[in-house]
Length: 129
Image 1 (cartoon, helix red, strand yellow):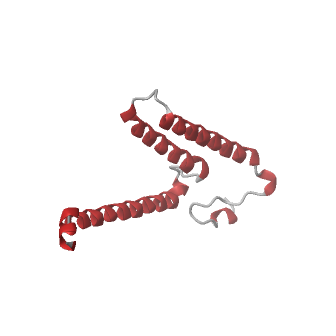
Image 2: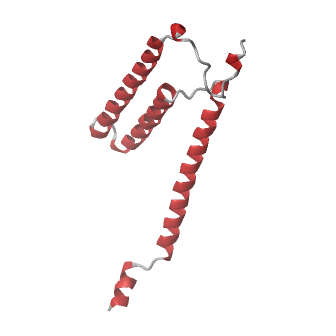
């Protein structure tokens, strides 16, 4: 290894001279990701508008397709893999998921508390009279 190849931040790839770069493989990865994303999107629209699927199964099908879409975006566009150089990316993603979960859970707790402590509509109308 040379001195310059060790001077790289975690999660960042070492610079490769322009003569050694292969842009066609990068374009291929993005093209495959784009095609998969388009296929999943079209499939989602089909699932939402078809009568060929049992009606209560449509939300489950859409959830599965949404999770697959997230996986395609993470792998093909954000390049989140299980390699040792992606530790920071995976930790940042996990932290983002934690924050979203906390905001959603906190909002649900607040709304449940407000609903429990709020007067019913009939009680509120009786106060106005």
